[in-house]
Image (cartoon, rainbow, N blue to C red; front, top):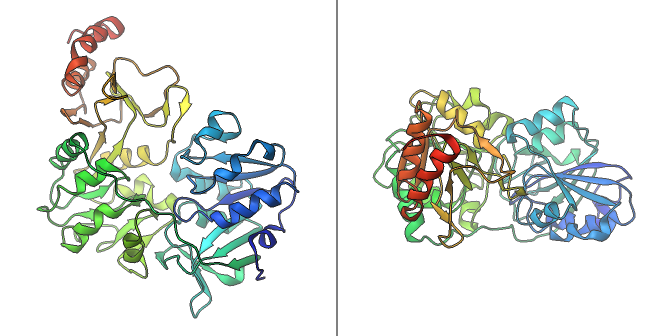
Length: 425
């Protein structure tokens, strides 16, 4: 049923409904704006989500008792609310969220979407973010959609029939964009270090930000690279245009970029629009280690907030303060290690707080979350070098990590290695 406003579309929500919200750059933020108004007239609504854009209005303390956010990944829009106890964080592998929905372990009453207009066959597209939304659509009782003419039509698992929508409205609005961050000498050097580990024919997984972009910017002389990732951004576009990324060496989906969401500039959204060389697939599939390992030479590139001298990687929190989430890091670290010729990289600047704090630390901060364990970690990269931790002893790990820490912290780290771990480095 077509309606005129977001509030009219959301009027079918009832007390105690559990709602899934499509996320990332496809966040249906016009629906979320309306949800705040509707929620004041409901009790005990729960909004499940990954990283959402333009959703800060839902952090209003006056929504207590009416609506509570439950985030599987914390971003800028929800970080303060989680920190203040106004929203909840649920640690989970990104690949497992669809399983929660399909199994019924996490009941769902409604789904909020932002989709493209229907084609001549009556099919809309989830566009630039499929993630767990495909699974949510299969089980939810009510589907509420915002049709945005600016949403690209993408291929893969993105199609959803207009006839399935219980309520929908149409409104043109800009998609959230993420401009490429400026490089600095630190991120540029890290990118160069990571790029030195990448071979011709590798199948890449990377995230978004200065380090992935710096790495991609150093790959212009490589050949036959592929992409199987959970997300990608503008950094891949020059390599596709120059034929460096052609996906010719892949076993799974040869000739195609595989992802579950994309976030970047309008140029990126224009690139994926009706592009049959890019598949947006269910995250339960893209992040399945059994699928990832089928490709040869998988190279996963991820980031961290802190690494201790045993190789434990904290990527979701700063001490007890949740910063992001578990996401898909372990899915790809493990999948890459199982791949023939596969490797994984955790890349991070050696310091934080303007050089006052070492990100390579003897011990993780109290409460820090271990996302990648010391048994899974392979390469750690900073601007000062590369530490290969695979099959290395605790002493060898500590020695290697101290060598890639910022020089001003190396002596104290060596002392702490002995004090905390009994390691003579």
